[in-house]
Amino acid sequence: MPINLDEVFYKLQSPITSARWSGQDDIVYQSWNQGIIRLSASRMTSEVLLEQSYLVLQDQCMISSDQRYVALLMKTSNRVRSLPLISPQSCFIMVFAGN
Image (cartoon, rainbow, N blue to C red; front, side, top):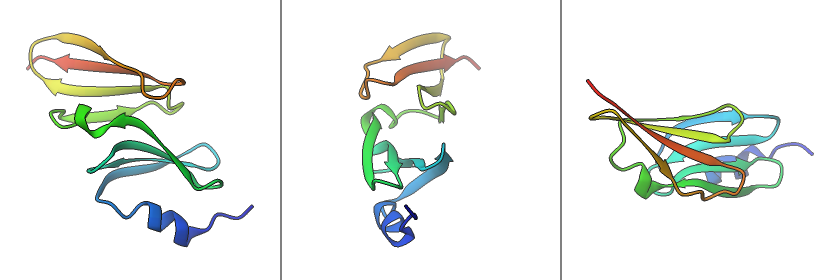
């Protein structure tokens, strides 16, 4: 089934800080309003991977290529804190790095 680009661009309208293809038909993007979202371009369904409230104070966010891990980086004392799961297939790790 071909991807409908008009529909994809409509779904990606909110302010987006980063987006990338993941696999054959998934787009993973970070929205200022919703957080980190996975959009299936073939089914045109979206799933929140990490809510925006977790991203507010972070300096940087990185998603693993297999979409199983999200690392949130923040400059402070050395600590690691795990975040609650939103997607049952995902695990989130928060990393705090000292100066």
